[in-house]
Amino acid sequence: MNYNKQTVTDVPAAGKKVLLRCDFNVPMAKDGSGTITDDKRIQAALPTIQYLLDNQAAVIACSHMGKPKGKWKPELSLAPVAKRLSELLGKEVVMAKDVIGPDATAKAAALQPGQIMLLENLRFEPGEEKNDPAFAKALAEMAELYVSDAFGTVHRAHASTAGVASYLPAVSGFLIQKELEIIGGALQNPKRPLVAVLGGSKVSSKIGVINNLLELADTVIIGGGMAYTFAKAQGGEIGTSLLEPDWIDYAGEMIQKAAAKGVKLLLPVDNVCAKEFSADAEPELYPAGQIPADRMGMDIGPETQKIYAEAVKDAGTVIWNGPMGVFEFPAFAKGTEAMAEALANSDAVTIIGGGDSAAAVQQLGYADRMTHISTGGGASLEFMEGKELPGVAALLDKK
Image (cartoon, rainbow, N blue to C red; front, side, top):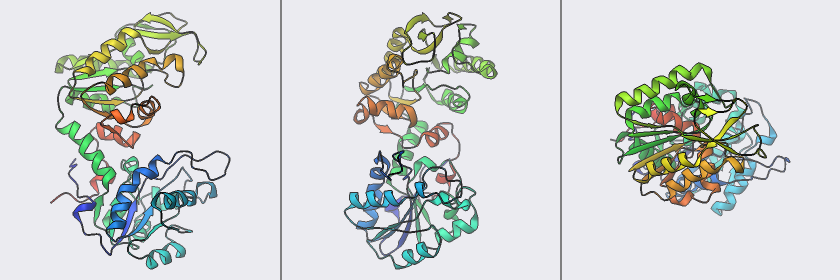
């Protein structure tokens, strides 16, 4: 896939109406008060918005929130986002009452250069997730240029991420440009050695990533729940640990593939275990593959932490996706904490692939010591799998 795409700085935007796809899928308070509990995604969109406004574009921002599944759900309205965005920009954000209805189209038609409006939740319309050409065309007809800046949704071929590019010149905003340059660069021309750290609970969800990274990386580190399926593939005893029986053979094949390619595949040598899956469970240490029948693995052990930290210390590039253990329980978060600390202390280009690893790094206060924290969990995973991302493929290639 070509990652070298035109950006908002490659096309004239002055005086034009610009349809800007943002990721304003922010967490809201559960009490229905309309309070945004974390506005990081709104803040992340500001550089592209500000650039367009400074360059006298009329910005028609749009986003989804939650999963309304084509129905109007007032609790998933973007009105609180418009309010917060207005506070951050220090100017009015005109809120439309619909998406492509009479209110949105009238407000878009009246919008002047240097002004910004926000359409209502795209997923209120069934045509958004179906990538319905008529809906995409109606969105596109409000504008003269399309700017995509929602990396978290580029792996989905929806009307606002891919469909509109059939009707308007399509370029990336600064957020997507950064993701493409950094993750794309790490996959295409990494500073070596390239170390991939893969955690999380399931082998099945990381299959494509493991397979693709065994082609590219010098070292692949496996942690999290999926390590027990690998341990089983090697004939180990894993007690009641998480296991995907259907993937044991595949894990074995990956071990063989790594050996054949000369890639170092590092698996845990010790595990912190417990009798039950609970925050209060007593942590016990066992060698990997020697977990008693009534115990489950919950984290990588101290010896594994040392080996993994050593492996990233001299890396040129590290890509990390997925925690090393049950990160939400403090007693079983030490492996993930040790990995975050090792990356923070490394001189490598460090890329955190969104999701739980990003949350871990942020909670531990290491965010500013990482080169890049991806804004899209699912999108960054598919990117690392080498899959074509519809929302990126739809953008114009650099000339």
